[in-house]
Length: 604
Image (cartoon, rainbow, N blue to C red; front, side, top):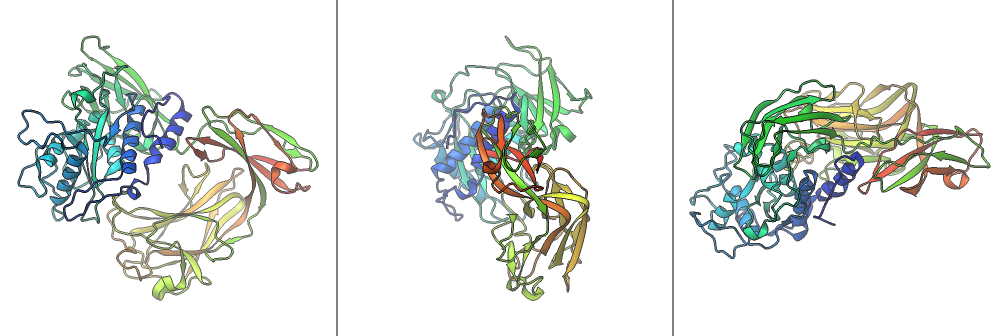
């Protein structure tokens, strides 16, 4: 898997989507690849090469997105940078990665969970601190410091400049110092130091060594403005309330910033600052509302103008536009055109326009059938669900898993509960959900029915039913939420719910999502593994609905513009009166995107 040498076309929405899924998402799951050899007792240890590559890939993703050379190396074996004026000097042969590991352990060892403070989060840590060494001091003095996260997750937070509640903050955040050091165009060599933590009271830490030796700096072949978020299409999940514009040699002391949305309306800007201390000079401003969004259902464009820029050979103003996008949603035309009728003994051809920059397309054929099935959690038939729950508990539970609650229906049911009070990656209580793995076509008076029984489920715990009309890119609640009976009781018997669904000519997906209200108490599986915490769900059924049974998928090259539908490509015999639907899918960045509008076909 490549981890450097990236380029991306910011003006192509699909290229940015592909880049996100092929590069950014490739470093997810890093917590399982850390290969840490240390111990929380005080041994800094090392991290695996594949984990360092995850960090390298994440850094170079952001560098490419921001238009600077994306060839930086991480944990290359280079040695520490020592300034003659440094009060503490490690051995010149000390590797940056070893110094960063020592610093990450020093951050961990000096954390006080009772106060939420850590005196080691300092670029001049005192020798009296636990775990202090000249190498740890050197990495702190030359590094970005993160507490409560590690690896690629820390890199993302450095770029977004988010701050975990209760940890130390500094001007590095409001002046986006972490980001600017990561984006110095001349930089080629970084080192990561990490320890993954062990519990909410033993959080993970990261130290990213950012200072370059003279031989590690290269002249940027294409000097220019460096913006965050960057011009063109930009993934909203890594947006920030701190926007910035920087450039080597520029003077932003008299710069003024203005923004407008796509409708030409002014965007409120707060706290415009300029700074030349961290990395290259920059102007930084704060935004709120839609401009600071981390999620967008539809693309949102903002126009930025910065004036009053000074400096020899530097343009006095810079104007650009940023379009925040949902990287899980494709907006290219995926319509299939052709006859709504096909002869059982012949074929019909359907045309389409392959989306720009796609790697391949595919046509999936579906037969439209009445939704007469019932989705239980029994071993047979095997449930058609997609679980997005923690591995700490079973989504499909037997009666023995319910403790004193007993069986809900037959022998098994679905269960959603909170795995723990705190997840170190989510930095909070993660939502738990499962999705019905079927495409549903609601008709008049359609409804979702299911049985449920609340176990130990507080009033701060919520179950909602949600539907998606775009293959799971966005979700919307339908029906009333179900909350706990009280903080001390559970349901003595099961109940049934019936939730109305609006009719739709396009298929929908449905999921159950369990989440915690912020700041309210909850029961967790971790705290009571033998108790029936959470909520149990069974006998999921759809009334007055059809569903689309998948029959066959045909993958076509990205140059294809037509598909021939007949008995050889349908995946099942064509019978007079049968109703079919055809859907076009697109692959970008190695990921198949959800279907667009489906084409209805009837066999004549």
